Image (cartoon, rainbow, N blue to C red):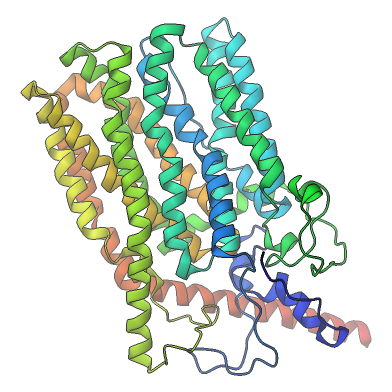
Length: 529
């Protein structure tokens, strides 16, 4: 059982505040400037690690690593429904057409009202949409409910990323993001197989009832086991949870009596400005570069995946079940790419941290205060091994279209594995970096990431078959490889200038914060007169 500290005495009232307000990477209101401004509070330090702590700094989160992994498994299962709900239809594309939406509403809701309530709402939408799909008798109704279904399932990724941002530090985040992506992307692998089997023997409508049953199980696990993790509500795990934020399992197995009660504070209402505010992330140079390059890779991978049914059916004469099995290498690449890249990111982080300590003569046993380390090269720790992944992705994409003309199905399937592996590796690097850049609004940042990727990806998926019909599969994917290569210098810019851009943003927001504080003081002085 986790050892949780006893409530502090009144003289240490500031410590309670630190559990929700002063800890690094704590979610704040959804304005990106407010998120960054939370890191501006000055402390006396030597630029490397804090020296003036009157009290020991509380842990970032009191959950053990095993408990954190348990929560990651739950949110990963929830996140599985986004790729599963999209890819389960691919073998049935001859019978139905699908659409993909990437909602940005759920991210701000999650970052203000809580992860748990957002999960419950998204799954309620998802389950109701599946019921509607099961009873739809027209193409128009099918498309409307499919859009609603996607609006629910796609949000599980950003909310799950929010949970990971709440309970993990940058040092341990890479591996857990890998686990999150690996389990989540199992939907990429098993979705088409289940879709092929169900479509072949039961008809495509049975897909919706299958998803309804599986979604109900996931919602039950969330209600039963997942506690609220949003730091403005749960702090670092030492604040007592109540109401919708409290999992049902606490009724039968209550947590430690040492939990701290916090004074009830009115929740921030979600407004239109909260929903739009995360879009400001895109105006930051480092964030835009990261998301834009990731969206190009995502689009190319989506075009490879979405065109598989038509290309393989016409060239290899496969039925629905065989088409479903043909997606297995793609899905296996996604799982392996995400899972292994997580461990690679943890290794890279430790390497960069060791180099950082050596360059500044910081002892190994000295805890680094990442909140004050504006010069820690987090960009290099995330991008250190992205280069060879991008090169393999470009090479595999360039040869993929031409391999279809060899009449050997194993070759394009092998290339699909490498395309999926390296694409998912890039997604993992990008996801971790975006959370590192905006840890206090990780769900909103991930939602914007998904919004940009899926918006560009939707255009690519809509255009890929038209381009293939015009110039052929070989030339089509060679063009896509060239586009990716043309965009790759963006990574060089992020590597060279990302840290400076981050520092510039911090100074800009610090100056703005000081100006606002000065205006408040002037106002008080005028009132006093």
